[in-house]
Image 1 (tube, rainbow, N blue to C red):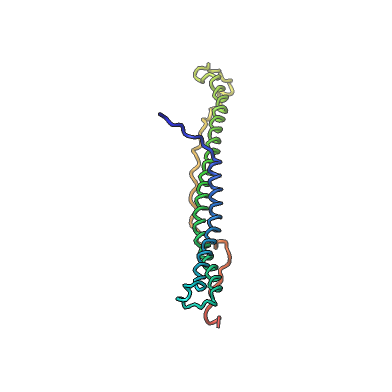
Image 2: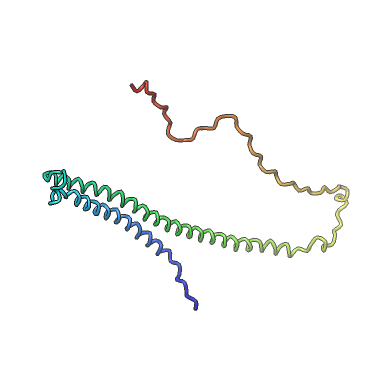
Length: 192
């Protein structure tokens, strides 16, 4: 039994890429929130009964809570940003494949239209050559007396032009690449 494949729908790939971008943004925010919560939880230990075993006095408990929350949020952001880059890369890969398919379809249409246009242009020329009888089948016409006295010069076809010769190497230094000017290094003697 043959199973029918579903039709190709590029909009599905675009929706997939949109969802990946939303997931990437949400993952960063989620990582920051989770990191801040975990950091605040670890920072609040001096405020609990477990704080007696720690060398941090309880009067610094709110400071450690705030510091732990900030530190956890920063770690959460770094982890979330790295993970969200993977989602964005996956979305860009899908969009790149979609654009490649679109460019290929445009190129295929251009080639197909060029192929259909070329035989139509060649048909009138082929019909004109087919309508004229070949030179061997035509009766030879008697040239006039003046034309018989002059020798006919044969038509010589020119050989194709030779390929362009490579240019000899220049002895001058090549021009520097465009970009910002490079400043010389500062010596230690001038800094002091």
